[in-house]
Image (cartoon, rainbow, N blue to C red; front, side, top):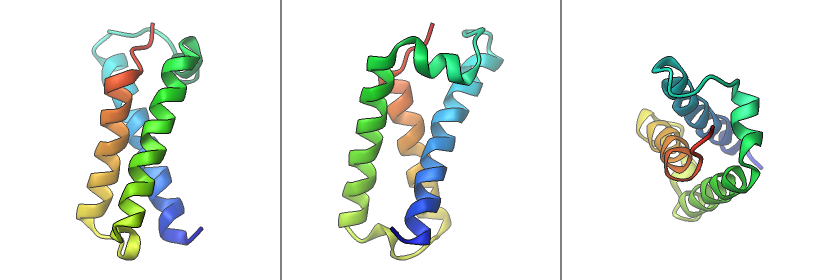
Length: 90
């Protein structure tokens, strides 16, 4: 695993975190991020698998060759969208 791939995984996970924070800031959730992830383990598992598959797809298409704003925002939005689609929290 290259340095860029590790950075992309961290950015994708930060997309998931920011989605939780948006819901927390709007008072749609009252739980911590860890509790948000473990409250519905099946939803969190599906979210992580979806995120993993999307990152592997980007990797196979050669998107990890350069660390640019565009690729970082794409990976961030992959994390945000996967979490938004599957992980509903409390």
